[in-house]
Image (tube, rainbow, N blue to C red):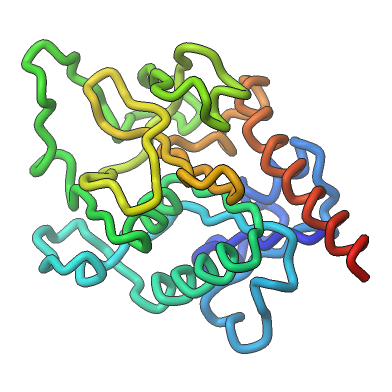
Length: 246
């Protein structure tokens, strides 16, 4: 099995100390099965050479890709990474490779499928219901602290195979999904209504993306490890399918 972990250049420099790398190992992957990749690797690597792709956190998706100007100074972009990940997501969909998105990964996936984002929650986000609780989506303190609750919204989802009802998560983002992309379905929301998880509406394409950071929680929250283990199981199934076809 071989899994690509798409990261920023800064994250790639961390190598095996990357939280995403370490979390997948904690969930059962072998270190040699994982490879950190960046936009700079696109000239000599192909998505089809992997059995699954994890799209991770990092810079904001350039608003130009959802036809908006950049409105705030804290919107920091990397268009080359965006284009690279859009291309690899296209390839993953065609090849039916499992895809897991985390934080920026979820936002990038939504934009790829013609959705939009709240560029800055502090400026753009207002809950639809006045009675909704006030939630800190960009938490202070430790990255592994639990900040708020998310509630599952689709009992038939991949997420519902792991969790039931609701769960506590961390929260480390200033952007989020606004208009949902085509071919996606919402599978979890925060208590204030913000989208926290999406999946492919096509059950034959394993695509699951969450707004929180399970890689920071797998050591103390065993239920979060199940999310990564589900992804790994899908990747192993692809490896077996490829082997059987040879």
